[in-house]
Image (tube, rainbow over all chains, first blue to last red; front, side, top):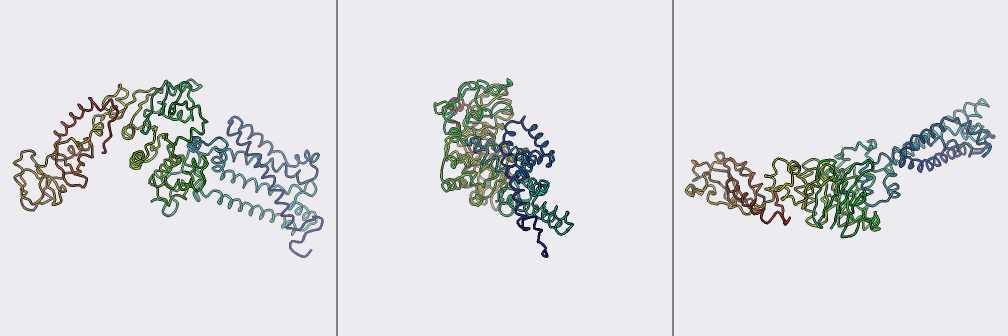
Length: 235
Length: 381
């Protein structure tokens, strides 16, 4: 127990192992939440009246403490990772649903008209036009959901051994070893920052069509058409 | 031919957007729907590609009810251009243009090479192919919109106020470009605008619609200007329809006088003796106009250009319209218009009075044969 990253054996993992576990427990719920939110959001776009109640429900779900979720879930899924991940997935909906709905709604009406007039059916229009144009908004939601999920995983220590870096924090406090506490807290923060940076990179790669440094154009507020990027755009 | 047959569009709240509209849209020509906002012109256009379904009546395309074929097949056979272009902001210019060919199952390479070909056709530099819409000016985006509509070579082009969001100079350029492309391709174009000048400039046939979705008049633009059906159409055409109508009369019939024209330094003071004109038009040795010499000014010996009256912008004989000729005469300090040939050499001069006579003759001729054939060709200028 001399090295900086040496951990007590009751954790049953190396430091990197805990980091990997933490990532898995944080990211799988976010992906599940995203996959669940996409159809829900699309329904909300199609049926306008559905959006306010759906938003209300996601907010109420978000307000349920994770401990309460655990108490209910433990009867079904036991003291497992799944019990930790289900509440995290549910929490992410409060971010994803409005992000996707706003993103899809921000597609200019004339762009949709043009798509319809060119003979794109509803499915193609959704997949080829609405979703790609909503991508920046969705990725913005993804960033918030991911960072929040990474920080929330730690509560898994409450149901025994499922908090990944959270377990390390618990160990550090019960054994009175500040090194472990710091390893846990700083490790979680660094992890969140790195993943967030990767998502920013992903957005850059996925949306080369966005004006650099400019904010996403919203529906009623088109950018001035004469904006030229760098050299030679204006002939 | 597209036949609109007793079409009415009534919305659930009872609003009637289009009211029992019937008209034939000829093949290979530009038909313009024009009218104030709320007259149902855009609704009519959207009923042609079934983005709006008629409540009553039907639309026949080459004799077949447009509801017979699958809606997306119908739409892919009609190019569609809208205000602000409506480009896909997440796709490059070349991929925007290639959209419909790709939908029709063309290979990526074929669709892209077709797209590049169209960029050239609408006057876009090939270097823009890989750019995104936000990197283009409004006028360039609109050209992309036209190219995208033409990509799969559809027989029909639907254009919904395509040029109303760009500035007047760019708009004029786009209009001229559309006329040029149309001369090459001969598409059946249905064009919606609220701008009567645009309608008169572009239309082979113009349908004027009034609020409530009723057709006020359907005629070639020259006939519209000469014989508006009622006070509404007359009002909509504006105050100077008589002058604008002159755009449809060629200047070829004008009798040009060459008597009062002399090259500088030829010493032809004798030109006065012709009695045709009080002023003498002085040209350079090459025959290009320099200016008008006043009656007392000797023309033998070198001419001091500072002592000549300016002759203003000349019109091109035979090519420009009577409107351009009259404009030159009105702006000329002498009241005489200068006509030049295609290379800018003086072809002759003509007085306001002579132009006035030509206008009266043209009106008389236009009434007897031009108006009802609908064949009145437009004259440049």
